[in-house]
Image (tube, rainbow, N blue to C red):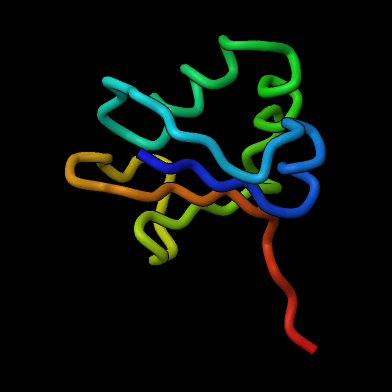
Length: 81
């Protein structure tokens, strides 16, 4: 699946996107896999209250299943103006 990182998440990880082979069943399980990779991922995902996730371009939750998902995007909350 494609995993996309935006704003400060991308800055901490150092990549805008990557292809990941995962057996994670949920978004949270994917996050735990990523955090275990390297310190830069652990730093990017250390405060989930400051993150949002979209699955196939639809806002979702961290307990959402990943079955059939092709794209996961992580980004900070957005404000209007």
